Every structure is written in C-alpha cells, then in structure tokens.
Image (tube, rainbow, N blue to C red):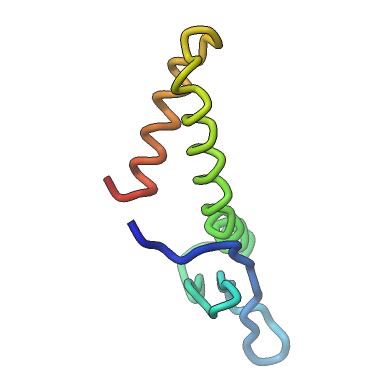
Length: 95
C-alpha cells in the first residue's frame, strides 16, 4: 500500500480579518488534507487535524508492537490488545 510518508504537520487556514477558517495537514511535499468549512466547531476540527497528522506515527507504533508481540504474546499476556492492534493496522492499510 502506498501512502504519503510523514511526518505530517498541522497548519491553520486563515480567512479575512485573521480569523482561523480551518486546518490543513501537510508534509514537506505539500498539503495532503484540508479540514475547512465543515459542520464541526473549530476546536473539533483542530483536534481532528492533529489526530490525522499523528496517523503515520501511530501506524508505525502499532506495526512495531505487533512485530515484537508476534514471538512473545503468550508470555506477555497481551493477546486481546494484540488483536485490536492488528485490526487497526488492517483498517489503516485499507484491508
């Protein structure tokens, strides 16, 4: 699966009179998403943008955890968490 490589950053989109209009998520290559003019309060838009920006790091953490647990799940007693991590990875990878 190909996706835009992180890290992702969050920026504000300004409209007239220095009013924040929305938020963008971008990389060094440019903007990858805009959360503007949506039916959510500004603080929710901002939180969503930050969650979206954290996606590459969250996915990497999940993948690293699952790789580690592959050989020691029984010892650690994390089988249920492991299944949740694996499901989240599949969702993030579109599978």
